[in-house]
Length: 375
Image 1: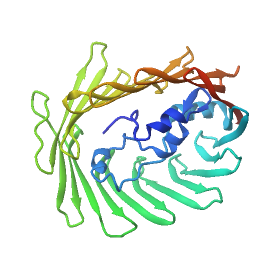
Image 2: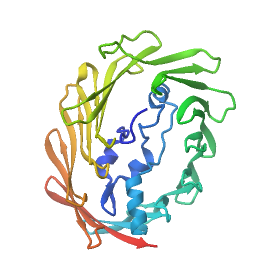
Image 3: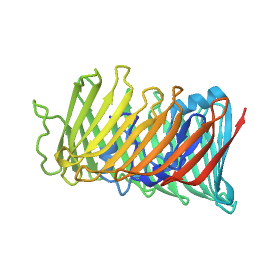
């Protein structure tokens, strides 16, 4: 199972371009709405059928939720000014528990572009997410059901009124045992994943079956005694998990795997003694760095995020500068080592982000103003 601090980066352009500030932190609203969490326990297995898999459009940002609740924020409006043009870009509403209740996005001409709405269970679990056009027509609908331990047992994704994906999962305590996949609303099983575990509750194997019970692929979570990855053979991958401690006393968990095309790769997660995620890194073959992230231990926010090409050369980097209150004062982005853009935040006396100025190659590109509503 992967940690909660890792996100999918396939839409990195949204990460670089669309930044919404609420309270102390810079949020990526479109990323929250559209990116899947890699922390899903079955991510590698679902990646085997990635062209069929639809990721979660919602990220449960617990630190942000806590701050929103403590400050009794009901919502906020972001107004963008670019040149002589000024327009409302987004309106966000929260419920009294700090959850998103609705989001409205607007075009430059003031017309409504899209609407988002969310529903929650009495135990504060997200049960429904709707993405609608400006006239209220449902475009995408996500429904979720949970067991008594708060684990997702039923997932359903609907597009334009038609069910595209259904997934049913069963658990033993907090360990997933089986996950069944149904496509395009069909009642017949499409694929099934079965999981086994060692006595210490660590993953032993993941096996994917087709609708006729034939094994399509197997992930064996084991490695050689020296901690190296065993060789891949047809339809089976040996996954090596190794745990070490660095010179600062942080726990480093390393996974060596093969992707669906048989190419080896490595991922690393770093935790402090309080089990907080401090960093994530993924590597191409031959241990060439691909992506590296560093996180603020107090907030979980990203301090530095870097992407490298297949030669290990940096192509993109984003760096956040914090003050002593863990507010993001400035974000700088670099392309191929050269400064591309930077954004500077200003805060109100009550410690909320009140405005942001965005510069591109040293010139002011646009500014953003934030107006808050309170319960």
